[in-house]
Image (tube, rainbow, N blue to C red; front, top):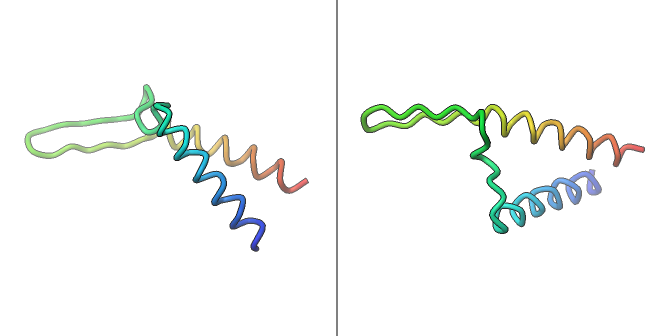
Amino acid sequence: MGRSLVVVGLIIAGIGALMMLGVPLGRLPGDIVVSRGRGTFYFPIVTSIVLSILLTVLMSLFRR
């Protein structure tokens, strides 16, 4: 359990570092943004798929 928490923490820190360097995580092409009137709806579908693939690969590497 402790090892998993460390891995998750490192992944979150890595994502934060990438965002600080200017990598546009969260605003990828294919993400849905609808702006009407005073409200905005944002659905990060492509970002979710990319993060899911990356986490699946990382977790499969750590399980070995």
